[in-house]
Image (cartoon, rainbow, N blue to C red; front, side):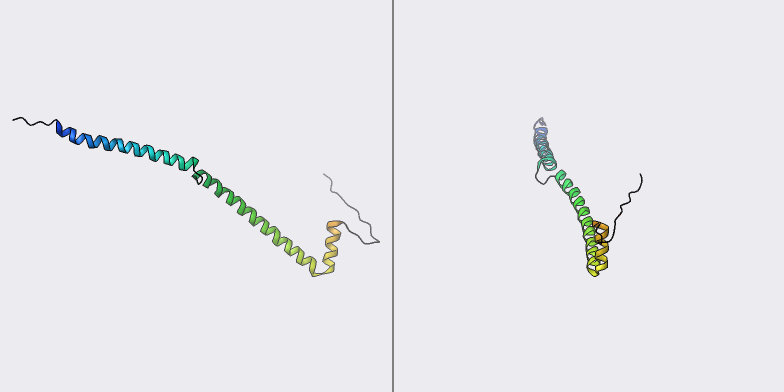
Amino acid sequence: MKKSFGTIPGKIAGPILSFYRGTQILRLVAAIFVVFMVFFDENSILKNIQYRFKIRELTKEINYYKGVIDESKGKLNELNSSPENLEKFAREQFLMKKANEDIYLVKPRN
């Protein structure tokens, strides 16, 4: 009596090959999913990175304008504190003068 081993490799190889084909399909689906998420999705990684850079720029802008506002508030408080400061500011910024004064503008040489 001879034993036939022809069917044993077929029984083992069949599930292995079907598993291998299944993993190829899974890899393909995973690759398509990754490409979609990186480039085409509304919340893609690239857009997320762009949004983070934009947030950093806007945060810097906000901090800059907060500083400008604080400086302006300080000047306003100084102007409201006394009439002499208000007069000084008007003379320097708007070239205002009293009735009996003359104003001379001096430009530096280049």
